[in-house]
Length: 115
Length: 114
Image 1 (cartoon, chains in turn brown, red):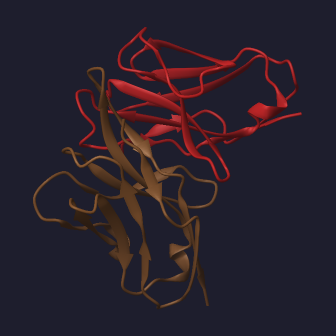
Image 2 (cartoon, helix red, strand yellow; image 1 turned 135 degrees about the vertical axis):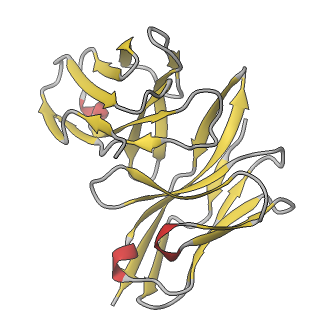
């Protein structure tokens, strides 16, 4: 079964600084990869996804992620963050078991953007 | 705009009460999921359903049951609520077959058991 490791539980940054949120998954078999964002007291919202093709994926709000098969990583980046990017970010990978397919989520990274 | 709607944003219940959390989606999705979210533990899957009247246990089903009588509605039931079930509960849905469209989540229900 797949597992997802988000290497940092909390990431504090200053406004307008670049940020990278790290995500590694366990298996190099063909996978779909996702990043979700959760603002306080809300559900999760899809930021971007990798299904196939170009390894650099662009999402909403200026975020992008790079799929690296050899390193089994899917790190999320933004070149210049805003206060409004303060949220929790979840990485997820598809996992097929017993004929069904589900998403497996990491434990999340809390991004705090300070003025 | 397509939606997953959870009936309550905040809920306070007493220990021992039977609690129903309702989730409705308007996207004709086959798959529906219930997660609980706790600080430091991320999202943990409680139950999921791939079709009407079908259900499968997730990673932490103990103390919970589910009901799916109609395609659009997936209910989570706490038979006898306990304080350790105080948590944020998230419902999600997805198209059948595979996960390439990802999940659509509801806004969550924050349940407090006193």
